[in-house]
Length: 396
Image 1: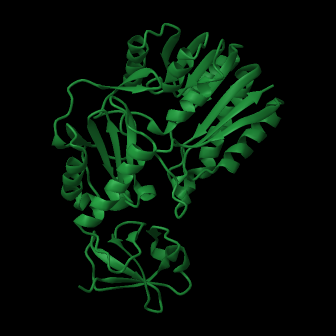
Image 2 (image 1 turned 30 degrees about the vertical axis):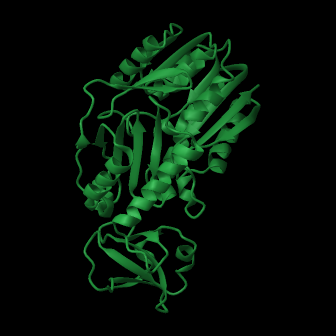
Image 3 (image 1 turned 180 degrees about the vertical axis):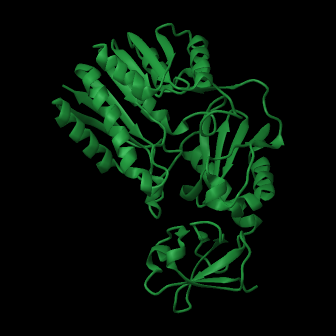
C-alpha cells in the first residue's frame, strides 16, 4: 500500500534520521497524496528517500509525529501492542513499578515511542491523556490493548489544558473503560499514603514525576521548620514531616487540593503539618515582611511557560519566588527549587538562582541537581522529554 508522503525541504532531514519525532511545518516542502488529519504518512527526504513513518495533522504545529523508522512497519495493532508492552516492561521488570497499591507513569509519550499518549496507573486504575489528534482517533484500539495487557478496573480520560487549540482536538474528561472509584484512590509512596482524585485536580491527580525528589528533599528536613510552597496535596511537606521536620507549613491557592492535603496528613497520623490557602507569591512576600524564618523551603510552582513567548516572564516568576525564599531561609538553610517547564533548562534555572543569590547577598551551594523519576525516562533522540528540574541547595 502506497501512503501519502510528506516531503522535507533540502538539508532538513538530519534530525529525523536521528529519530527526533516532531516535524514542524517549516521543515516541510510539500505534501503529496492529500492525507486526512490523523492519517499514516511517510516522511521523505527532498531526494525521495524514506526517512520515517508517522501520523499527520494539518491543524497542529507538529505537522507529523514520527513513530517508526522501518519502511516495512505499519502503524497497526501489532505496532501499538509492541510499544505498549515495551513501556510496561520497563516499569514492571526494570523499575519494579508499580507495587500493589502504588502509582507510576506507565507510558510517557515520546520517551516510549508513543508521541501524544500518557498513561498513569493508580493502584487498579489507569488515567490516560491524549495530546495527539491521531492517537485520540485510535483511542478504542489503545484502550482495548491496555485492557488486554493490564486488566485494570477502569480507564479514565483526563484532558490537558489548551490541547484543543494545539491539536484541533476537542476532548472532555470521562470514563473510557470499566468503572471509576466513587472515593479517592489511596496510593502508597515511601511509606506514606496519599488520596488521589482520578477525575479532578492537576495532571492526572498526583505529581508522580517528583517521587524521588520528595525523598531526596526529606533527607534534609530533620529538626527543621519547613515551608512547602505550591504544595498541592502535600507531597513534599508530608515527606518532610515523616523524616522528622519540626513543623511543616504547606501553601496552595487551591482549596480542594488543600482539603486532600489535610486528609493525607490525618491518614498518615501527621500532626506537625498545617495547610494554608494563599497565593504562593503573596505568602512568601508576607513572611518576608513579617520577619519569619524557615530551615527548609520547597518551591514547586506550576508550569509558568507553556510557549516560547512566555519564557522570559516565567524566568521572572522563578526569580521572584527564589529571591523571597533566600530572604526567608535561616543560615545553613536548604532551598529546593523546581521547574517543570521543558522550555526552561537547568542552566537557565541556575543562572536565575545565581542572580538572586547575588541580589540578596547570600552564598548558595548546589548540593544536588535532580530531574524527573525514572518512570518518566528521557529519550536521547528527543531531549525535550527532560523537562523537570530540581535544585537542592545550601544557603549560608
